[in-house]
Length: 352
Image 1 (tube, rainbow, N blue to C red):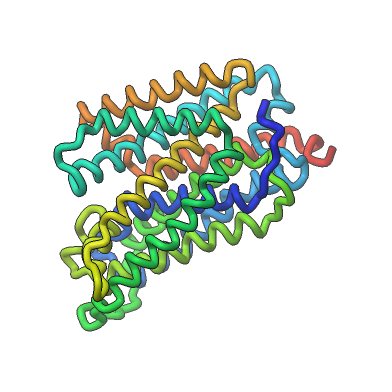
Image 2 (tube, rainbow, N blue to C red):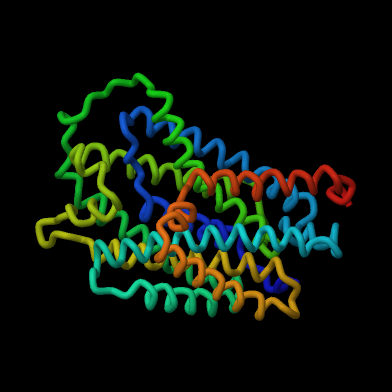
């Protein structure tokens, strides 16, 4: 059973916002062949709508029952919820491992070539496991400070690149390449994993309003659109095709008194991945029964580390775990299909 400590709904929205920022930091925002600014902006808009749609089932359950989805599932099918929890444990393992791989790759390739990926992964998982034991309420308090720092970091990265804008290098052709646009939509809609985190951590939020999550998702996609503007009009065509474009923007950022703001990027991305993986871990903890939640959480952390080691040894496993198209399918099943089935089958409980 989840903790009875209640906390502000806005704090959970901040956790979701920070978690989504990790996508922009660790995945290539634009590396699609033949993609244009119009294609990617269309991807942002459609991705926003998809993410909002994915949040609908959990919002309905929360507003009608005052519970999050997993709590509703536990009360509706107490003897069979273990099968649902087992599926979501696999989903969360996929999610956490994928982002862990990306973070360690960024750290070793772009920031410290001598870093040992296994040590970084083990330390990060240990810290996130400890944070998950403390619960989502404590994590959301930490997220407040990280949110303030994230604003400063983005202001520095974007503000330091304003003088580097070059509009002449881009053509403003609004013709849509449907293949590229589809890939852009697929990328930006992958952020919908935050709706699953919401579905596992929102039971104890106070004064939740549906506009809270709508505004949180809208803020994420405004940031995504702003990132696209800087990636297109600050980085050259070659720069746009490189990995970790936000890291490149942090390197090109400069002010009259300083240049190369990659240290702010490193601090921000480390904070973001901590919040994301910790939120995933709290979701796993909330899906387990209270008596066994600590053991489940520790075992889950070990499983994620084993998956990470396997991914480092076998490229095919790494490709599968970091494929946002696969993540999109899992997001749909996790955020829409399973909760909707529960809503249909147990619709009478929604009005109790």
